[in-house]
Each structure stands twice: as structure tokens, then as C-alpha cells.
Image (cartoon, rainbow, N blue to C red):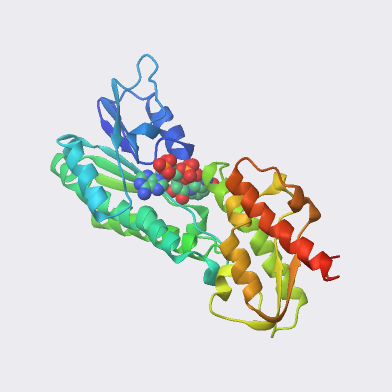
Amino acid sequence: MDLTDATALVTGANRGIGLALARRLAREPLGRLLVGVRSLERYEPVAAPPGGAREITPVQMDLSGYEEIERSCAALGEDLERIDLLVNNAGLMTGGLLEEQELKQVYAMFQVNLVAAAHLTARVLPGMLARRRGKVVTNASISGYAWFPAATTYAASKAGVVALSESLRRELKGTGVTTLHLVTPGVNTGMLDDTEQVYGPYNAQVRCLREHLPDDVKVGTVDKFQGQDGAVAFFSMATSSGAELPRNLEFLFSRNRLNVAISRARCLAVLVCSPELLHVRCRSAEQMRLVNALCLLVEMAGEQGGHS
Ligand SMILES: NC(=O)c1ccc[n+]([C@@H]2O[C@H](COP(=O)([O-])OP(=O)(O)OC[C@H]3O[C@@H](n4cnc5c(N)ncnc54)[C@H](OP(=O)(O)O)[C@@H]3O)[C@@H](O)[C@H]2O)c1
């Protein structure tokens, strides 16, 4: 596509792949580059070299829901109709065993990855169709084609993106408007860090325990056991030391989760944790309070001769 004097919009362009795409597009002789960010405070300035985009404007593109997208489109004003190149890049990742995924996160992920891509495209298309010129690029993923355990919902959203883009490409035949979906391989951005760090250790341990224990022993993360109980409950902290905290101290040492884990046992609760977690570095009184709860449990177990 000839990008001379064209108007382009990239969503989720304050970091990761979106920022890289915006920086690359800034080198093209665009008339206008609209850098879509969820919140303007998060705008990471994009500069154009000589001969690159004439104008670069950050625009708020909050894709969290119907109203937010409508507001973002309204704020674009006449620019909405002028967009020649739309890059639906913004996305969220969910991962983990399906029954243990946080369903609210799953809803938010489908919203951004798939529903928002359809919504924004529908709003941008009339301008493109009127000018008989335009391209809608949507960031899919290898997950839209290759399906792995623990990637169920994310893969489903990306397979949906492939279907959306490919069906639309056929629908737009002969209009001068085309679509393209990107099959991005693994790129080391915040997205992969977040997911792997948060779910990796827990899922690895759940799988390992399931492999080694008889089928009638229930294994899962704490949240799965709300409202259930058993004669004996084992609670494993799944993290070796403070330096390897997958999310943050508040998550691992949450008193709610600890309470749920221990109160599920009718006769005996066994807490499994690395001794290093008792010496984790705290940065606030609240963190000390959380870590102290674990220390107290270990101390009480020691007094009863149950600490090893
Ligand atoms: N990294 C990979 O290996 C990989 C592989 C295949 C496909 N992809 C796809 O590539 C795209 C970009 O991924 P990335 O790796 O660059 O991820 P990233 O670094 O986590 O960036 C995600 C971007 O999406 C934005 N976003 C999330 N929720 C939003 C919402 N409700 N409204 C508006 N913007 C929102 C984020 O904005 P905030 O900063 O405000 O949160 C951020 O700019 C995604 O569609 C992803 O699925 C990535």
C-alpha cells in the first residue's frame, strides 16, 4: 500500500509490538500517524525522521468495552473517516489451565483481542469504503493456528481474529479495501513476561503433582477450592525465594488465600514452603504483616512438633 500522505492508526502503541509498529510507520511518508494509547499518560513519544510522517498525534483508544470504544471514536472526530491504515494491535493474554483462569480476565481479553478489533474496524470502514482505499491489519498470533494446553482462551481469541480478518477480506473484495492478519511469533514483550511469570510456576507444579498423585487426589490452585474441603490439605507456596516471586509479595502471601488453603482441611493442613520465604525482604508494614502470618504458622507448627 502506498502510504504517502495516508493517515494511520495503531492501537496499543505505548509499548511492545504496537510501539515498534508506530516507530516503523513514523519512518513512512504518512500525512498523519495516530498513536493509539489506552491512557494518554502512558504515551511513549514517537519521533519521525526527515521524510517520515508529517504529523504524529497521540490519541486515546480505550478498548475495554462498548462505551469506551464509542467515546474513543467520537474523540477522533473527522480523523476517524480519514484513516487509511488501521492496525488493531492492542491485546491481552490469558493463560493457565482453563478451570483455573480468572474468568473476568478472560472476558477482558476477548473484549480487547476480538470484540474491539471488530468494533473499531466497523467504525473505520465507512471512510475507507467511501474513498475506495484502505487496509485493516490485525495482530493475530501463532496461537490462532497452533493450539497448546494452557493457552485455550487466548488461542480461541486469536483464531477468532484470523476468522474475522479472513472473512472480511472476502467481504471487501473489489472495494479497494483489504485486510491482513499478522502471525507474530513469540516476541519478548511485557505480555509474555506477565503471563509466564504469573502462571508458570503454579501450572508447572499443578501438572507435576497431577502426574505423580492418584487420580482421586484433587490438585489445583487455591482459588479452585473455595467452598470445598478434604480430610487433609497440602498447601504449597510454589515459589523458592523472595527473588523469584512470580507476581508480587501481596499475591503470594495473601492472607485470604492462606486462610482458604488451611481452612479447607478437616483434620490436617500441611504447608509446604521454602525456608527462604520466611526471610523475604519487606518494603512496607503491610508486607511485614503478610509475611509474619506465614512465620507465625511455621512457629506454631514447630511448637507442636510438626515443623520440618
Ligand atoms: N508478544 C508476543 O509474543 C506476541 C505474539 C503474537 C501476537 N501478539 C499480539 O501482539 C499484540 C501486542 O502484544 P505485545 O506483546 O506488544 O503486548 P504488550 O507489550 O503487553 O502490549 C499490549 C498493548 O495493548 C494495550 N491494551 C491492552 N488492553 C487494552 C485496552 N483495554 N484498551 C486499549 N489498549 C489496551 C496495552 O496498553 P496498556 O499499556 O495501557 O496496558 C499495550 O499497549 C497483541 O495483540 C498480542 O496478542 C504478541
